[in-house]
Image (cartoon, rainbow, N blue to C red; front, top):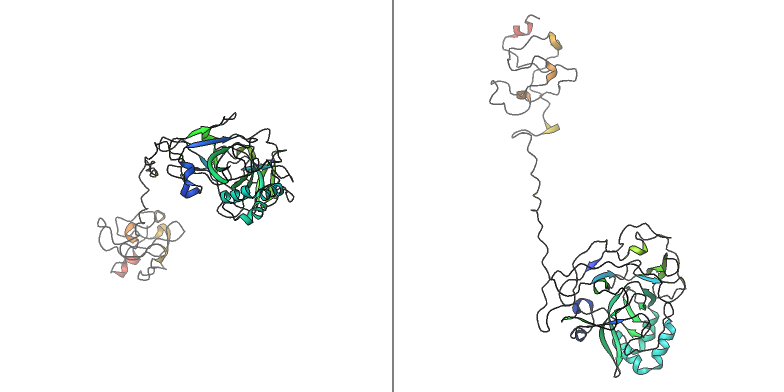
Length: 401
């Protein structure tokens, strides 16, 4: 069963310019020659540690991998990284291990020289090799992957930069990073950026392109369950880390990505890491590119709202106008005699004049119209407050219309 096509589940990062050894580990000597060894999935390659312990054949159909963006510096080969926790990064068969872990441990235990060299290349104690192998999870690569591989030479593990072909059986650690290549028994580490122009060795396989090679970045936290793509039906398999398939199950909730869309390149991209340098040996690699300056000016902070009035609080805090004389006995509506104010509207439904608001009087209005606004408002069936009462009380008895 496939999940909806909703793009990458994990963010995709693009490696930028500068040495990778400090950030991704691996011996610095592996970056000095600039050689990248292409390792076909079924070939042991030079200097294998053991006979092949791979048990799973490569998938008949592999997903398409989008090309990485070009290097910001204009030179070198840009690589794309994915977290080791990315669903669909690896494949597997339900309840079938891609590698025979017990046989791998037995072969290294039987040859003490190779076992010691393996421990050296893997950075583990010689006595802890078997336990280290049992802690790993057998899976199959779904994309060509750049690693620091090792060959056995003169009793030691010799580091070399390699690209493992998609379909290669590997053992990954609890952070989802490849640690052992099962067809050769070689220990694996994170890749190291070449400091000179790179040169590939070996015959490229059909579909190989350097800009479609991936780098696996160890997850920030241990991965309890790896979400694999089934080699049989292209569905999802949940495999607990450190197991060989005996506890495989269908995930309770599917990730929001189709298995064929994992490497489509539709996710967000961000600069983090390094690429192989294309400068001559001894030259300084390009510096980390500066962030792109936005083409438009940054947004200005919003201006504060204008105050309702210079002297009085705004909104509901206005006083109810206790200083205005009450006029409960005045007749409402048009029966009220027109006040001797030429600026007041004839129709009280048109609202109060500006000078009746609780603000300083408009310089253009006649003087004498101050005061706080009353609670009554026009348009609600109540009479508008009358103009200031004249000194003569008889004005209230003015003849009606």
